[in-house]
Each structure stands twice: as C-alpha cells, then as structure tokens.
Image: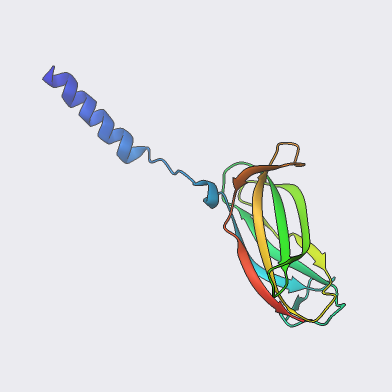
Length: 145
C-alpha cells in the first residue's frame, strides 16, 4: 500500500510540474488596446473633433486563444448627460493569435463632450447573435466637439 501511495505521489508531482495548465478566463480570451479616432484613410485624429466631422472609432482587438473566435465589436457613444447617441456593432471571426482593427463610423451632430465605450462580446457560431459572455473589459475614450 505504501508503494502504491509513493507511485501515486510521484505521478501527481510529474503531472503538476511537467504538464502545466494555462487557463484563460473569459475576460482574457481577447483584449482591446489602442482605442483611437481615425479618418477614412486610417490617419489618427485628436480627441477634439468638429461637429459634423465623420470619424471612425477604432481599436486593436487581439485574440489571445489558440482557436478562432466569433465575436461582436460594439461601440457606444454617450453624451455628457450619459444618454446613448450612437450604438453600432460589427460581428466577425478572428483567427487564433490574430490582431486586427475594426472601426465604426460616427458623426457628432452637436457640440458636446462624448464618452465612447468599446466592448467585445462572444458571438454565436454563425456570427449573427451576441451571446452572454464578455470577452474583454470595456475601454473608454472622451471626445470633445
């Protein structure tokens, strides 16, 4: 019995030391960075823009997994009172380890201070429906027009 226990203990140590498990939490599957405003030619713009100036709200989205991921990139713009003035999304698939930069167009209609919130949510396998799991933490920028 003692010998079986010893073999079991050695086996467990071997499994733990030589076969590490790298679990990714739901919010670590993808990440958002470099949130920015760009023009139609993808040139970076300042966060102070003009009324009726069309801008693209863009960010770098990276898939940290070793598998492809269906996702929905959501951009929400709120005015200074916290009222949503624009809401848009793009659904797509991103390959394992890939980074790319989706962008959604927006035009401020009145002068105000706006807050842009960007989310990445898991999409259904056909890419058309948002499921209940966030894949990143939200990112926020402030725009003055």
